[in-house]
Image (cartoon, rainbow, N blue to C red; front, side, top):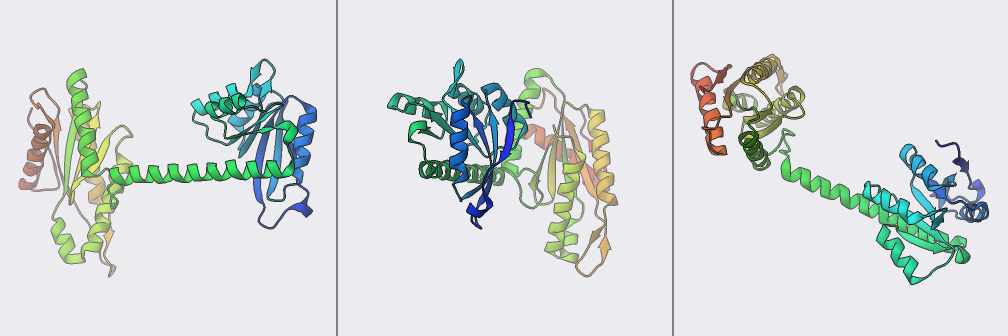
Length: 326
């Protein structure tokens, strides 16, 4: 923590309610009198159990925000040669959405509009400050921040659901094809190496018929985890359909793709699965590989070539890797 920042705990236990929320509050202000007044008012708000941090400059405050877990920021409108709005603008540009309340010595519509444009959540005039107005402002900005965080989480979950196959945790077919299209175009434009693997579990219908579909789903889920754990972060893996998976290996030579395919084949073959009655069994897979070339003019041709290599792996005995001819 910067040397000019002071950390204080300021809330008398006898004023706190059982439901009091713990908060770490950062005050960035260069006026000791204003800081002391704000501190006294905060002590009289029973809704929160506050750990108060004080910084006297925007630079120290920004450093504290980088290294400390802060829930709420009180920021002086005037900080030496700059305004507190400069700091708010910087925080918002960096994606920092923590609530900010601007404290200003004078209030007018121009200042109010400026604080909102900069991304502050509220502003309070120091001359009108009291525990009640402070409490209302704190509740307003904290509730809004919580709602925004919840909405962002919901949006992120909706995006995830639109892209991910729930059973395997890999990309679903629609999003997989979008990513494959992008990678094929990139390989065509820049001449970067790209290999595609089509992987299919051998005799999967037999697994479903023998052990039931719930066990079959467990097998698919486990294979999804194996793929996720084995491939690189830059590779793209998805469930193509049923028990078939597709993996794009970016910036990968044919030799590298064959090594990866063999590693996956061996990992799946070595895995032990357990049926509901405790019976254990193994599963194997067949893999077809194709390297992108200019002859594969579009994604369907690319996928079709990999699928034909997979078909050859199946018809030639299964549990093997076949490379499509170039």
